[in-house]
Amino acid sequence: MDNSWMDRWNARYSEAGYAYGTGPNDFLRQSLSAIRDKGKILFPADGEGRNSVYAATSGWDAYAFDISEAGKKKALKLAGEHNVSLDYRLGDLPTLGFRPGQFDAIALVFAHFPASIKNEYHKRLVDLLKPGGHVIFEAFSKNHLVYRRRNPAVGGPTDLESLFSIEELESDFQGFEFLSIQEMEIELKEGRYHIGKGSVIRFLACKI
Image (cartoon, rainbow, N blue to C red):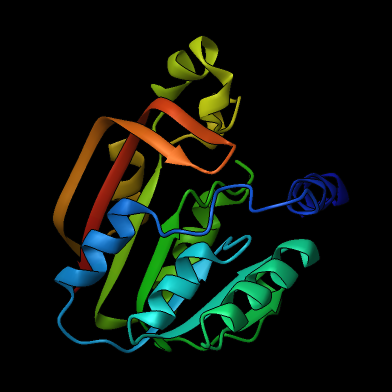
């Protein structure tokens, strides 16, 4: 990943406070409550740790990664405040030493990787998941650009290629049973950078 991407996220996470708040994403919270057996869960592009910390407080063994050192520092601070620990790694996914079949769940919550690598990363992540493991996913849909133009405060990528369609996600996550998958309009209230109505795709899927 190029330095401009890293610099962008380091700048955002160096601001005072937590850019997307400290509470968990609503769909993540709902989905974790629906998974009966807790185990190891991975949070790609975890930023300041609001979601991985929540999982850890809920009894999961939480792992995370991001390219932002500023984000990692805040995540570990948040974990300390909640008296939980995280295995939080810094860098690009192929370099981080995760093992095939290591995880019982992977939570992709607004993990908008650069368009040039997003599909490759999804396929790498599939390999890290055990058979029977779950993927929890929420990110902005390709229809979100209309919402962003009306209200930039809702956040999200500005280029179509970094956004998602259901067909693209079904292709990336072949070999999964989709327990639910839906494109929908939601009202976002997550920190300073997710405020207002947006279009997202949410799914919960189990690896066959």
